[in-house]
Image (cartoon, rainbow, N blue to C red; front, side):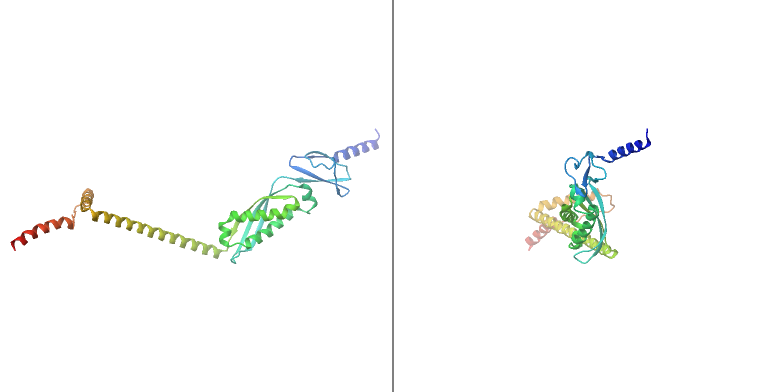
Length: 259
């Protein structure tokens, strides 16, 4: 066979091979023909086998899978003038491959930049206490704002999570002292509340015993039994005034009759 024919045959096979692309289920293709978006069957987005015209069409692959992007640490000054360093993570995916390629030069880089600026803007309007305690609300605000900004690019931001909030050492010590003071305050309040409730119960018990002297004597006998059960060598038995008063009256009565 003539070598020239072999070269031509190889060239034709190479051209045919270059015109076929196989796209996976999570991939889409944006096809340009002479610099313009191609339409019709040749411009199908996939997935599956895509046929293009070699040297005339240009195919750009776009993945529709969710992308996890780390936002670099950002220096943020909160609303109460505290300097912190915050980083975050963003989950987004391409929902419109044509917009992601045509309407923005690099949708990944653009999403990263808008995430960084939004992170500084939103956290700069928040108090430090809100940044530490209301993390879910801040994440929701970041997701909403970034999603609105990237929607014209065919990007859907599904979640934004603030990962770490690095505080200065002085602020960490101040927060630790504040937390310790708060725990001590709660301890004192709980102790005072317990003392108050105990005094209320003792006052109620005193009122009940004062209305029924027999109950007081039964309580006295019960206390004596508890003391007798202990392993002690010496036991002192105090006598209630109610018991002694009967003896005092019995002694005073004969004396009054002699007079």
